[in-house]
Amino acid sequence: MRSDKQAGKSKEVNSRALEPLLNPPTSTRQVAFYQLLVAARKMWFLEALSEALGTVDPTVVKAQIGEFVPNKAQKALAAAGLRDEHVFPLPIVLEAKPSLVGYYRLLLGASQKAFYKGSTHLGAFKGMEETGTINQKQAAKLPDFCRAIAIPLASLVAQISTLSERDLRELPLLTFGAQLQGSNNTQIGKKAMQEVFATINFIVAKFVVKSEPDRLTLKNSSGRTVYIDLAHDPDVSISELVGDQLHSKVAIEVKGGTDVSNAHNRAGEAEKSHLKSKKKGFRDFWTIISKQGLELAKLKQESQTTTEWFDVTALLARSGADWEAFQARLASAVGIPIE
Image 1 (spheres, rainbow, N blue to C red):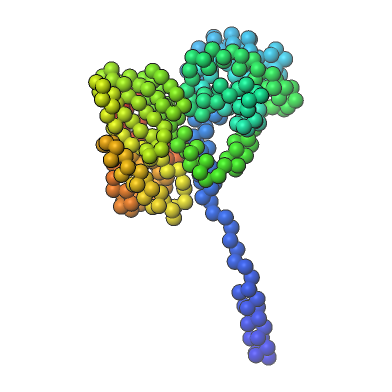
Image 2: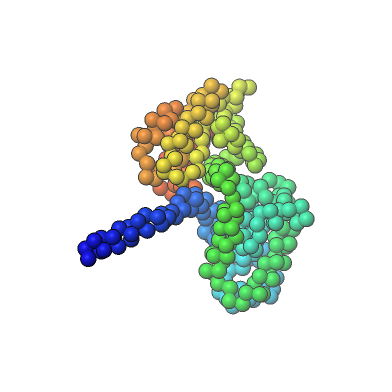
């Protein structure tokens, strides 16, 4: 009897050994999405809109609501207890925070490809969404933009009879999530670079005299011209014009990956880029990387050239000790007072 039982147990063990091991996907991609989500809250979601509304003249907002928001939609939103400017774009709000073009795009459920394709004639506003900057030509077209977008948004209000503030928070997330899901790892990394560049623009905005998608031109406290460029090797660079000589000051590498096991490889990639930048004459080298769950001492071993380490999630969320430190170091590097 014992031998039969033992044989039965042996067969059971063997059958289990033949079963495939459970192998769920890692959380790496979702953590990367989280990094971009915290940045999006400052750029394209209701939190960003509320911040912008806190900086503009409410009397102008009220006047522009009367001009750009259809009467039927105003009544429907009032009945639902919603603010008109939470659904409809206004020129004064978009001037205060240009990236909010993305909020209204996401609220409509439109991908960037669909929203900015040639037939919509909206391509001129893409730079506002991505960099959070606005030029004179874009500013001049804002009334036309607001009138045009008001048409499909009025239809949205009319067709969703139970529209609530929760819907305004969650509807954009549906499109944003699909947008990220369709991105490959390279695009996600590029997106992280763009978000860091937008964060830098947020810090230095008061001193920007010319804004371009890949370059911010500043006048610092000494009256000198400073350039902040978005490129590759380095990802972001800071240079200052002294007389007729351009001095390369800071090289910044952005590593948006989140896989802890691969973090040291990302730090090694930053080191290679910093060494190239050092040959170009840069004097300071910053690495922006996910520091969570990592020992900084080990990261320093992989990139000994790096002079400053900042956590990418803290910068994109614009909160925490690394965010405070980054603001101070950036202000010092470009020569402007700390706000």
